[in-house]
Length: 333
Ligand code: IMP
Ligand code: MG
Image 1 (cartoon, rainbow, N blue to C red):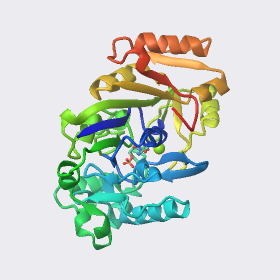
Image 2: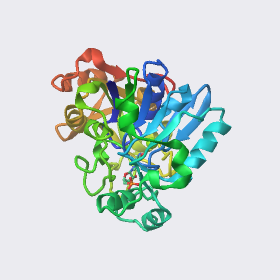
Image 3: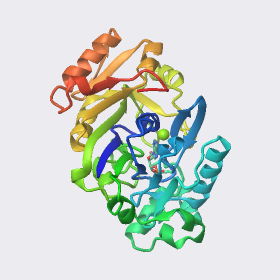
Image 4: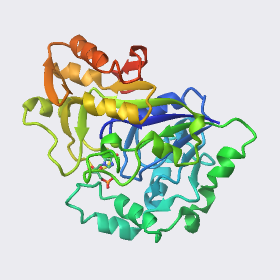
């Protein structure tokens, strides 16, 4: 078995959908696995000129690759069936390509109702936190116990470990390192493990891991209750140019410069082998360049200066310069 992992190093919305869709196109992978989170996630994907937003279903489905929702996730059956319908309506065949691990926990109507009352964290109100709470309190419901989900249920041990053919998994994470339940800015976090370690919880042995694609934007965004954006009109411009509005909730995302201290922490803890920095085109459109390093914000005169600074700052991160990729298109890496 082999596995490559796509992991977000910031606060979600760094372009994991785009990167997973792009990597899955290579046909190298036998399975694409969503390894954490629920339908709080919104992955924007451009497929053959059409825009899709997925919440549960991994991006392998666009290429006909078996796409699995793992036990690190929580699943809302209502949202799941809606998504199947949307994909089919958009011309994406899902039949026989989408699977749910039998031990995945379910988001119930009660969970969603409870989450609508949150004001403290600024959640997506999708029932995520209450579903994980009930899982750990051992009072939750598993997908295998929901009759409508029966046609999709698999045992990941059978699927990954008893296959006659070599299994090559692409792991698609949700949310990000800054929102991770353990490593994020608690309590302004989500309720799941958004790290490479979180991917391993889905039946992947550590020895299978090959590449870890650390995913980030060349600036940062965050959605939630805490104040994140500094008072500077430049961030308003970045929000507009970058279309920084939640794919799930439509909320405006707060913006800031890329935090290289956070990025390096995330790269090390996730064992990142390749770093992808998305949306360079957005800063180019705004014509402003900045970064935070050693806790201090600084501005740069040009794109070239910022890129050189990032590469120098990350020299000891364990990722060589040749594996740092600056991306400037919605459609490719
Ligand atoms: P929850 O995951 O809905 O409980 O929300 C907890 C925090 O994570 C809130 O600040 C949300 O805005 C944030 N969050 C959850 N999912 C995503 C996501 O997919 N992208 C960005 N932020 C998210
Ligand atoms: Mg998103």
